[in-house]
Length: 458
Image (cartoon, rainbow, N blue to C red; front, side):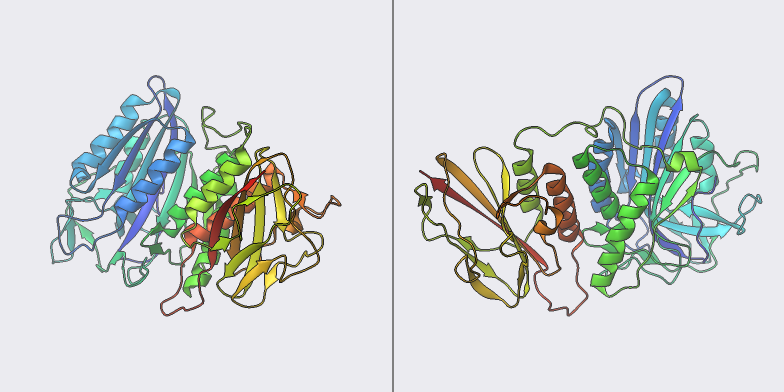
């Protein structure tokens, strides 16, 4: 099986995930491997710990319980191979195994003729050593991984986050994720027969094409972050997720993020058996497919509020209102952009206050202290019964996001938001909050901000 296809020599960072289903006995297992530092100081440091933290969370959401993590000193050549054996020996028929790898990778000359481009892909464990004379010791060849995965009968799903050039970097703000090392040769003393490295059935999702460069940020590699969003969005929607669907979600996120950073966009690609590319990677035991319970709208907005770092200042003249009295709200809009305001009462019904049928355009032309409805006009907010608490959520975005446009079938001034609409909106804002980055020197502003206020109606 061909794990990686890069077209240039050199050592670059990669994050790999294998989803497998397997033999005749055992349990579901996951092995997560990540390198941040290396024994050889000539190999540059990565953000493997961050990628593993991200991967561990979305792997759990996919349904895996028994998870083994190897990091840095534990992630030696022998340790990784032993971990792969642990997967092969402990997973039975009808079970699944998962292998996630975050670290450096490289290419070397293929000695057994199983690679079309004449190069084997190699992985760089913690104890790999650059000898200084054009050789690397204690590496892992993709053929070795293939042999161990071949012991697991069944399906293989691959997620790959890697760059494809010896001179390319996966970097942001000067943090390079590449070790240029031209003309790589091996001293690993590995013998792999062509029969041992025959291709197995698999489906793969790679971060970018062979002629493109993947990017990492201090918060994690963009593709890994995008995969996290894809899994979380799917879980919230209660649906399954295939690699074909994940590719579309990841591409949208990556293209937007690279545009914000001033980098060239890159595009995830899929490869492998078509039936596996369309198969759900969630386990039936996961939360995907479960209906939302009462209060789900509030939980969605609270979750979104927690994800958005920038706070939006909102206030009212008083914290308690009598039924029938008018309510006004002051919002400190940081700069020109778009404003959405939602309220949820004790009945847990979410209502869109702004924009509304009287003011469908929610664009604010400049930064200002905005009093609503006074500075906008055309409608009134009135405290309605029964007595209880009202929670108001306000969201500011630089980009055009308008909650109203997704729900225009009713005639009320203030419309009730449906759960699927809330989840769609939350997913969109979550992507912008989690992937929001700026090119060096970018002074454009906050991008996205959120605020919350609780009032009492009596």
